[in-house]
Image (cartoon, rainbow, N blue to C red; front, side):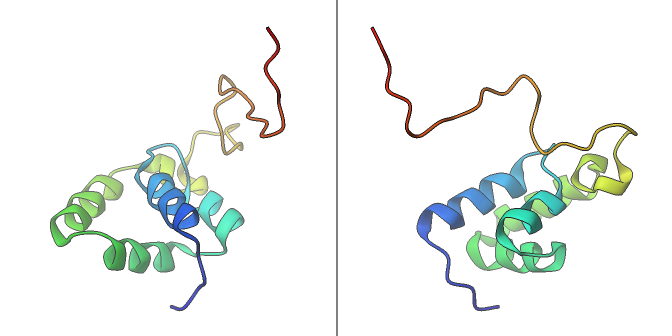
Length: 92
């Protein structure tokens, strides 16, 4: 698997993979990595003990797969999450 990713992209993929409510489909949508590729990516970019802990944790998560989610949950982020704008200038 040879994909040119920046350090920021690599960190974000790892963060999304560890998040309980971020489905693998969201990672595929944003970075083009299928579930199997995410598993290989995590294996290559984690310590063996961290990878084993991650796999054990993800095995029991129904939220990591869109098909297993509760009906009606079709978004990638929480509705309570604030929108981030990179061009926003704070006004005092």
